[in-house]
Amino acid sequence: MGVHFIAGLRMIVGCEIKTVSSIARHVDMTLPPPDNLSALFQLENGVAGVFVMVVSATSPKIFWRVDGTKGTLQVERGNESGRHGYLVSFYPADGECQKKFYPFSGVTEELKSFIHDISQSVNKDVAGHKPDCRLSYIEGARDIAVLEAMLEIKC
Image (cartoon, rainbow, N blue to C red; front, side, top):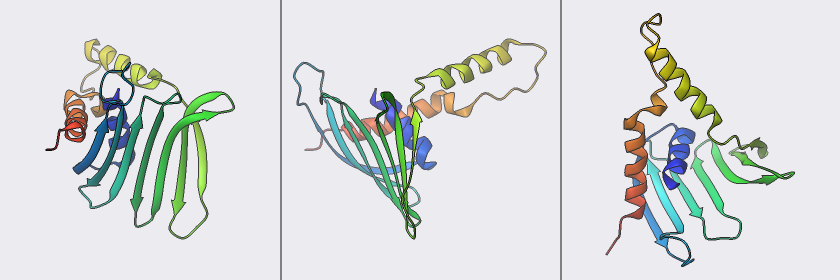
């Protein structure tokens, strides 16, 4: 599942990840390893961030935080009023924190986009349709490369 959260991270920051440094641990022996991942990353534009994924907790925690010159963006998966979703907090460098909760929709939008692209590609009446680039195998390979770098065993 981590690859999907890397995709989310890359989508949030809108920039490629240049370097990572991480610690991965296996805490809950009933789960396959690793079940905890903490990573520092640096983007191509020099911005640094933190990615933490803990799936061994009673309440799994997914958390992104990116610090930049204009402020800090934090995205945390959690619950609000009994609904699963994401709490997005923006801490501007010169202002008050802004927070908004977005209910979790699963893969509904991704499936809609995928089905639309497939239907357009087989429809002979539609010429020149360009599929959503986020669904390309290249984007998937980039996500996997970042996760592999985070999970690389360091001696």
